[in-house]
Length: 230
Image (cartoon, rainbow, N blue to C red):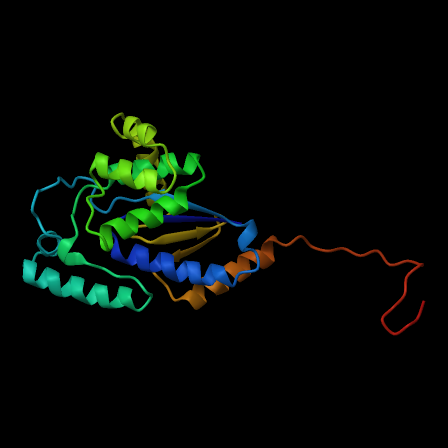
């Protein structure tokens, strides 16, 4: 089974959705035969880094309101995150363009460390207040999860994976994903948003049952039945 997940690092529901989905996977019988691929989706691809700008100010501007209202919205989101065991520290979050972070995820995919990288980026941004748009910070984070720091730095100082990020964004538009998180199962079923774990479990089970090969049986001689007849 293949599960593709479009998300952005600075999408608070994306981290929450990741936790709810992971909870469903824990009890899923086909988890060892499932491939999870993180796809890029930038909510604000034109964002320019403004030193000192708080995430409350940024959200307020995006919503056409004040920084105070932005803080209220973020406080509400932090409460929702806490329900699934996540700590959101919006007061020290550093808002920046996520292109470099998505490029790092594409590099990590080639190394078989994409899911670990996604988790590390989320924690760095939401809990630790790290600047996930800064190359040196991304080098450090990459090294922490087992990537080669020199390779990460060389990659991010080039134009590597820019087209891959753009292609992911284009494919999201093609399949009708106007927001994230957006989960696609075997190119057939889609789930939009940080849905309840029970819904993810239901979809996983449905797709898994459809994947199982049909078992055909040819009756004949030379076998015993459960009632003892041979």
